[in-house]
Image 1 (cartoon, rainbow, N blue to C red):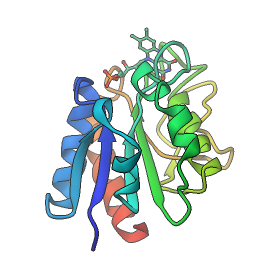
Image 2: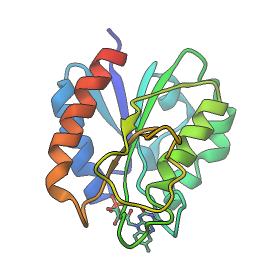
Image 3: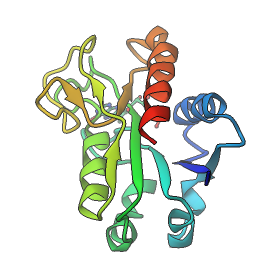
Image 4: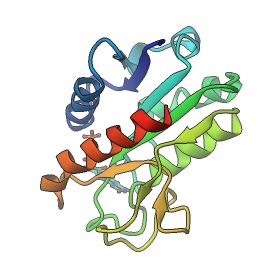
Length: 168
Ligand SMILES: Cc1cc2nc3c(=O)[nH]c(=O)nc-3n(C[C@H](O)[C@H](O)[C@H](O)COP(=O)(O)O)c2cc1C
């Protein structure tokens, strides 16, 4: 089996914590961390199964290091690739844009041909609106909230990885 590429910025400390757990849960023989700050087209093309770590910043936006890659991602043919997205958000202070970046990224890669996997339940979260909310009580990825629900991070990640192992 080809490895799973886990793409995130190694400079984002909280995102890196999540990504480390994800890689560990899959096993280092199955998943490899890729620093998105130094990623080129060939790095994305090297994997058929990818996981993107995309926290939400700037009131509902992608962080700048992902934003800069969007024109390139839009040009990549993701057909045949499965992509799952996770990201940090803050449902209390940014309840109107909770985890928006997960939804924005899922939409971009879906338009580029990818199959987006790893949907999760919105149960247990309290927010007003989110671009990751699919409207059927599901997020199109995993959202973690360090500021308000840090204790739920580990069980949420474990559940997500178990779910992905079946989907991937
Ligand atoms: C200036 C600023 C803007 C933010 N905007 C949002 C937002 O629109 N939606 C959201 O859910 N969280 C928002 N957050 C919360 C971050 O997503 C959260 O702190 C996250 O843990 C950051 O992860 P990172 O350090 O790995 O980048 C914002 C945080 C800051 C400091």
